[in-house]
Length: 478
Image (cartoon, rainbow, N blue to C red; front, side, top):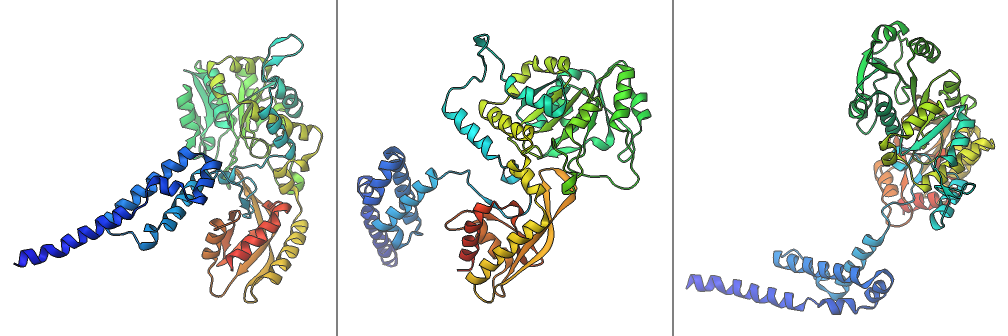
């Protein structure tokens, strides 16, 4: 009798579950809803149908597990789930972000924002045919290098130049071409990690070149290089430590000394400059080697990034003696590492800005060169707008501070700026930062936290983004 009594509730539960499962609408019923039908017309019926089936299958599984609520089971609830899932799928993953961190070349945010001229060149090249590899004069196939080589030669002082997809690729290609199976001499103090785990020794090993370390971490002399040279030596490598500094009791030979040694031993000198500084930024308080000076000093080759201090698209640029660059270009790997027409279009437009002396047209250079006094004026005006629109208990203060260049460049050099500090007695800076970073609506904003306060640096905020930033801060306090 007890067993029969125990089975009755279970039978009723099964009966109730079956009733709930039968109440789930069909795919056709869901697709017939007005919002979903409209969504199917704009995004494609196939994808909406697939998502509707997935939502219904998930709902059945949740009912069987006993974890679905009444709202989820309703037709309105199912409709909302399908709409949200479709919108999440079709929404772009790569999004516009407001950078209020004060880090100019923020690696996680795409490094250098492109100049307007570069974006226009990309748009024009993307939607039309172009003479990417066509020589009008000869009426036959040409080389894509021609669109940038003249500008790069003028700006760097090099005889020739080619472009690959990033500076790690540039270093790899040079080593593979000139020193595969042979030795490359480099100071121990220059065996850097470029970023994301890419290390000079690893790149060298993959290129087929043999690493010959000389000197110590903090001191390497020209005699160390000279003693290491032997019949297997093919290249003298000098690496600019763009993402770190060794201070104190340090020493390393100048590029001129290394070039002089290379000439005596008939060995080319290759300098990896990393950040790719084409303009002298000393007036902004930034000390970074300028590419043309390395070429004038006699380096046979230099390589550098396109999306760091150069302020252009991601690229790796190899510039130097024409015969050596031509040899590198003939390497079969060059084709695998070369850039596409959009990168060339953006790089050419960026280089033309340098050629015309219009450095402020390049966003990264404009941000770096903007005086702290100008940032202060913007910050005070911005803070005043916040004070009139936020609750009275929100504390807003503008104080001197520092921006950084970032992107693995100038690690020990800072740019004076004025920061906006925001604090609230009951809302933590972490909660405010997360709301800005993950807003229900509007643009995501990346900010900093310091001393328990939210920090905004307008150096890296475009003027036409300020209104959206104000709205984002207001929404965080709503």
